[in-house]
Image: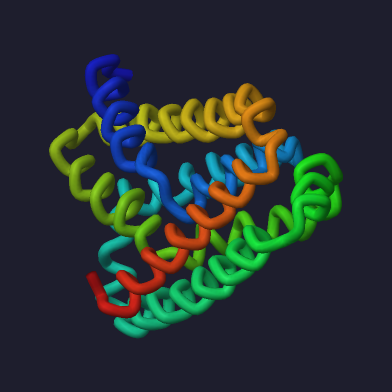
Amino acid sequence: MDLTTFITGMTMGLSLIVAIGAQNAFVLRQGLKGQHVFWICLTCALSDAILIMLGVTSFGRIATWLPWVDPVMRYGGAAFLAWYGAKSLRSAFRSNEMLMASAKEDRTSLASALLTCLALTWLNPHVYLDTVVLLGTISTQFEGQKAAFAAGAMTGSFLFFFALGYGATRLRPVFARPSAWRILEGGIALVMWGIAVKLVLGS
C-alpha cells in the first residue's frame, strides 16, 4: 500500500467531513449527552466506509441507470431534515428543568438513536456528493492505488467521528447551563433547515 496515497485519501476525507452538517451535529449532540456515543460514531464511520467504497468503485453509473434516485433522495432528505430541525427548535424552547433533564438522562433508546443516525446519513444527498461523487472522482487520479486512497479516506472518517463524539465530553461542563443547550439546539435547527433548503433548491 502506497503511504502517500493513503495520506492523501485521509486528508481529502477529513477535509470533506469536518464542516458541521446534519450528521456531525447529531454526533456532537449525542457526545454531549453521553448517549450511545460508541455505537453512533461506529455507525457514522461504517456508513462513510460503505459510501467511499461505492464512490471508488464508480457509483456514478448507478445515477445514470436510475435517474429517479437523485430527486427521491433530495426531497426525502429535505423533508426529514426539516422535521428534525423543528424537533431541535422545540427542544430549544423547553423550560430550564426539561433542558437539564434532557442533558442528564438517557431517554433515547439505542435503536431510536441508531435509526436517527442512519436517516441523517443515508437520506442526505450531500453525504453522497462528498463521499461518493467527490472522493470517487478524486480516486481516479490514483489508478492502481485506489485501495490505498479508499483506506486513507475511511481511516480519516473513523478518526473524525470518534474524536468528535468523545471529544464532546470535554464540553459537558459548558453545557451544564440550560442557555448553552438552547444555543446548541437552536444552532442544530438552523443547520438542518439550511441543508434542507439547499436540497430543495438543488444547490
